[in-house]
Image 1 (cartoon, rainbow, N blue to C red):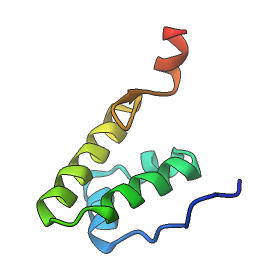
Image 2: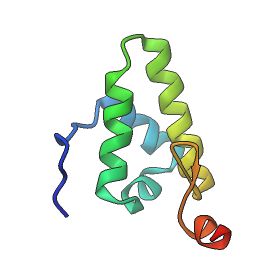
Image 3: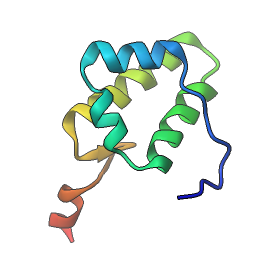
Length: 81
């Protein structure tokens, strides 16, 4: 799959949080565009507090498994159709 947006590098603090929370696998299971969007969204934050808030949201969504950017995603979305 080719991304139309610039590929984002994963900051060390994001990689650490994914490993520490045991969610790296859930992150890797997401599509390339979702992984890239999460990283771009976190990287665009100017304030450290905003970066941390966005990181926590991403981790919560990965933990839930059926949410992406506060929207129903995956099998849960199929059930709503």
